[in-house]
Structures are given as C-alpha cells and as structure tokens.
Length: 294
Image 1: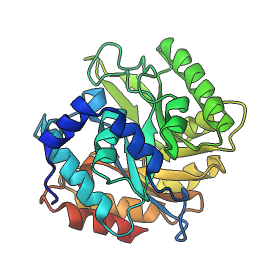
Image 2: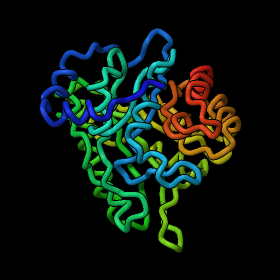
Image 3: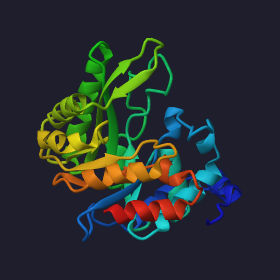
Image 4: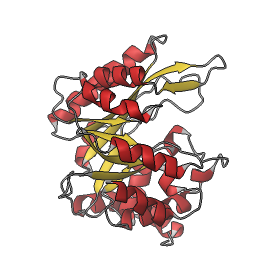
C-alpha cells in the first residue's frame, strides 16, 4: 500500500486549508458511467455514523492513515470507478491526489448515529447539494430508513424528497438507499431484508421528490437472493447493490452479487468494509474479485 504522510496532511490543513478547494477545482472529472456501462464504487462513509467496526474489531476504521491507505490502494485498481465518503475523508483524498479522474460521491445524511436512541432520526448533517456542486463532485448518496412505528420516519422521508429535488435541480445524480427498519425488543435498529420489505422500500424511494430523472437506488440483496429478480421489477430506476458487512463468507457474498448483477436495472456495486478490510487482509485481491463480477 501507498504510505500516507499524516503529518503532511495536517500541515496542509493547518497552514493552507484553501488547498482542499484548489484541489477540487482542478480535479480532472469523468462521466458517471464509463464505456463498460457499469459502476464500481468503494464506500467509506461509515466512520461519520460512529460505525467503525469490522468483524470482531470494533475500531477497525478508526485509524485514519490506515483507512486512507486502503482507499488509495482500492482506487488504484483497474475497474474501480470512484468512492463514496463524507467531507473529511474526501478532503484528505483530494489532498492526496487520489480522486483525479474518479467518480466522487458525497454522503448527505449521517445524523442517525449507530446504536443511539435517535438512530432513525437520520438528519442531513453531511454534504448539502450545494456543497457537492461547489466541490466539483459527481453525485450524492443518502440513507432513508423507514420504521412504520416511528413518526420520525415521516421527517426523514420529507427531507429525502427535498434532497432529491435539490440534486435534480443541479442535474446531479442522487443514490437513495432505502430500508424498511424496526427496533428489536432491546432497542437495536434492524433492517428487514425480506423480499416484501425490500420491494416496499424500492416503491417508496422511487416516488420521492418532483422528478426521478436523477435518482438511482442503492439496494441490498434480499435474504433469499432468488427473490431479487421479482424485487427489481418494482422500479425502472437504475440501481447499484450495496455490499454491507459480509463476515467471513466473502465467497458467498460474491455469489449473491453475481446473480443480482445479471438483472436489467442493476448497474453496479457500492461496497465498503468487505473490500477495504477483507478477512484475509488482501485489499487488492478483494477489490479485483468484485470488479470481476461486473
């Protein structure tokens, strides 16, 4: 891996904070979708939600130098189109020159901190549409978890609809990640990955805002992967599959993705921890295998 000089990043942030905007302004850009018609994005927006764990290591993503080194390696691999992250991480990657010619996606809502009593009150505390436009980024992403027993979900839906409108007004793609969620008896938030729940989430997310012209969906593979063909008939919006944490069964995850990637509305993958922190530690091999599925 490329070694990241944290002291140099801190020096630039201390003495030349304007270097971040300068790097964003001169960054070479590319179309969202290249010649392959597919999209491979590495996700690293987890830390801002306090979700630092990978497997049994609860603070795996807390080492910023290590995370940046893994991201730089992943972005250097053939077939990787870009990255999804929050402002702090994207600013570091801009200073490192790692985003040139890549698709850059800003994360809009990070307010629902993992494990908090307000986890489902997922406020828009990250990038605003005007930030994504100002920084010359290429797209945005948001999470909308819907709990039928939580009145606060209505606020999340309304905020999501306005974000869809704001991004579409700037002709910027917005990747919407919907879930039907509920709290367990011990208070933890769990996402329902049954075919019926994912189908409902697709239908709800597809109708948000005044136009769907710039809306993409970011969707999980259902508990039973054989159900995905029927689920994906719910909308004509282009979709990418989210990876999530796959544990030790990396091969099983690849097979789930492989099958769903054959469906006509599925255009790619957005995968984070399972590629950046694979069980065997080989980031390049994990990324290359995922790219091969496309």
